[in-house]
Length: 378
Ligand SMILES: Nc1ncnc2c1ncn2[C@@H]1O[C@H](COP(=O)(O)OP(=O)(O)O)[C@@H](O)[C@H]1O
Ligand SMILES: [Mg+2]
Image (tube, rainbow, N blue to C red; front, side):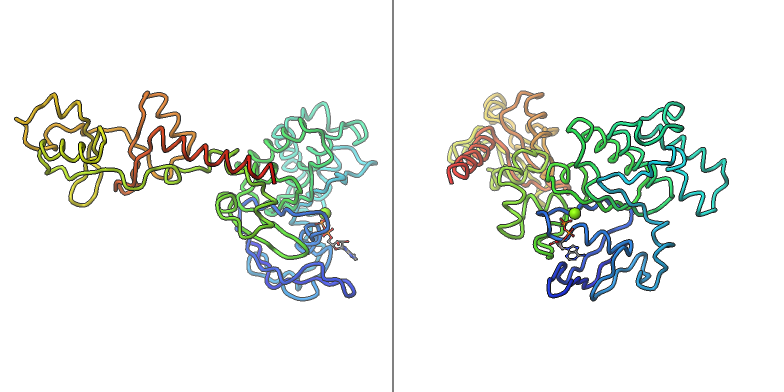
């Protein structure tokens, strides 16, 4: 884990970083984002002691890095920068193996094996590339080598400062995918700087939004989209962002919260009366503890007449439902597949939480579009 505690950085009178405290969990992917000059690069450079803070301390796995030898520290922290930083006079193989060989904790065979593996992981044929020089590779290929080199050190932490911003969009998207799956597989702690919100949303577990040397919000992607801490964050993310990422819209955001429901011990006649007075054509059935146990429609009630006394006798005991944390994409998928106009929502503890109907969906979605149109007019 990396922990920054009350980190400030001043150069002369200028405050570059202002009292930053945050924790980065081991194996997580954290993205720093913010306008140019807000202090992202400075933050990263503090983590591998390329610069020292004016006050505060950074701990890595509980140890204050102020007491560590910077060279040793850097050998255990990969660093990838925009301008790639491959050594032009070394071959690709020499570039990748430079630090592992310096560290002397693996045999040459182990290092070579690792190089081959990593080359394949980033989609480059080792036979074709290892003996070439950086200038013989395209920008995207060089940046992949930069990634390989950072990972080849066996570092648990990799710092990446706008590593993809000089690449064309297609190469960038490819490398983002690679990095994401690399991280899934290798579980490195990655601290990644970008100024591109799309990139941040694609990659991050948590995002730290900065402005003028201050942290505006450090949060999970979902919380950031749902509860932006202030106006700056809201604008920075973009007001329509949540709605362009429907995975973050949950059943509980869309559902009617007090659907008409009844206890299963009610009689058929009572059920009909409740439907009539509430002007609904189906009832959600609960047991005494509010567990959702069934659904019954007006059609079923009429067909069965009153000779069956209780709703529990005739209700559909295996109703479809979605969980309150299912997302819009999943919900629409179920409703379309089953060709249904409404679906009950329950909690993970089986309690009835609400009901989604086509009109609740439509009203929520159209409200949002209305808001977007208004913000375009502003
Ligand atoms: N060595 C330095 N001396 C003076 N000012 C600096 C120095 N390094 C960075 N800065 C200033 O600190 C601010 C933050 O820089 P930086 O961390 O590079 O921002 P970012 O990476 O977010 O664009 C900028 O205003 C920059 O001009
Ligand atoms: Mg920078």
